[in-house]
Amino acid sequence: MFPPDLVDRVVVEAGRVEQRQRLLPARVVVYYVLALALFSECSYEEVMRQLVEGLAWSSGWERSWEVPSKVAIVKARRRLGSAPLELLFGAVASPLATGATRGAFYRALRLVSLDGTCLDVADTAANAEAFGRPGSARREGGGAFPQLRLVGLAETGTHAIWNAALGPYSTSEQELADQLIGLLEEGMLCTADRGFYSFERFQTARATGAQLLWRVKSTLVLDRAQPIEDGSYLTSVFPSREDRRAKRGGEPARVVEYRLDDPGLPDSEQRYRLLTTILDPDQGPASELAALYRERWEIEGALDELKSHQRGPRVVLRSKHPDGVYQEAYGYLCTHYAIRRLMHDAALQADLDPDRLSFIRGLRAARRSTRTQPGFSPPQPPRRPPASDR
Image (tube, rainbow, N blue to C red; front, side):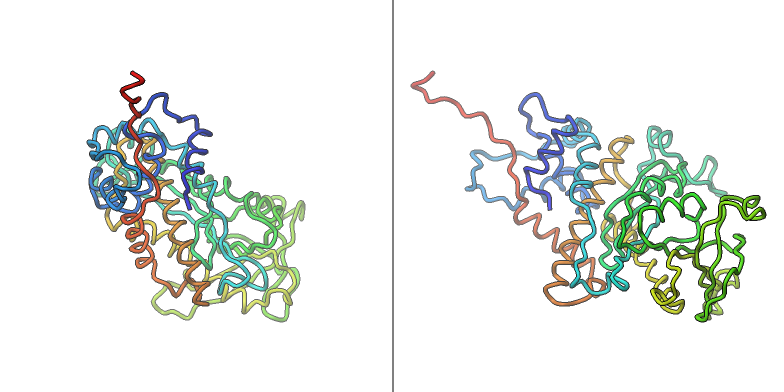
């Protein structure tokens, strides 16, 4: 997924090429950041050992290579910065599913989902100032850890997070979502939870040509303009309440309402209202769209894979400075995507739905491959000229 020539290209593009030969050049540090996301519970030095222990010494290494100290690794990460990892993620991440991928399409529409989460980061003064903390009734000054907010677009059928926007905890999910909405394309069907709806955001997403299936809050007034036999109805959405009263500036949409029969949920959580751009019931019957919306939870699974399995439960991002936090977060996104690419290819070969494969086993396979053949070499020492030339 991350060949050396691609890594070198993003390093150049980010302007992070070193001016002199170092024990830890930029290419090695990029791979090291990816390894941090694979071996999240290991120390800095142990991650480096995991990264290089499988190399064959006969493959070109002319002398033993000592694992750098933690201080040297930290300085190398700071020199690299977050830009190369952000560019690397943007260069490789895209929807994975093909026509042969099971469970990835609805009537030829590629299923994608929009959702967000937060990642705990190291409790330092710099991180607290840059990211902020969630509120807490038990602790003066807020939660135990500052938090990085992440909103992602994931391919529902493969769990591949193919684009993401990152920001401080103080940045809302809606603000970050606005950075991603324009990346939707014709031929996609995007699901989103009720917290993301606004008239402007819905229309921006619709303008991309993608179809939408978004849950909306019960407080949004939607007139029943035209009932449809399948139980749904056509309506219009408006920029504001005043526009709705004046019937000004409305845009057509269709509403699918249903109720979950779950006595364990409060009444407000049992009732669902979905707003969709699929106006023709023949192209999306209400019963099918209602059943399809639950696929939105697949992005919750993808984010849980990244947070709980790949990073580890109750593990915070280790970087003590904000730029390192962003660098580390993009490293996690890169490695999660690569693991999901591995799983998708395996599912295709076995003719299985990618959902049937275990992410934990995919993670373990990635760790084993990194130990046995990391795919890069530490820098070679300068060659000394023959004695006759000195």
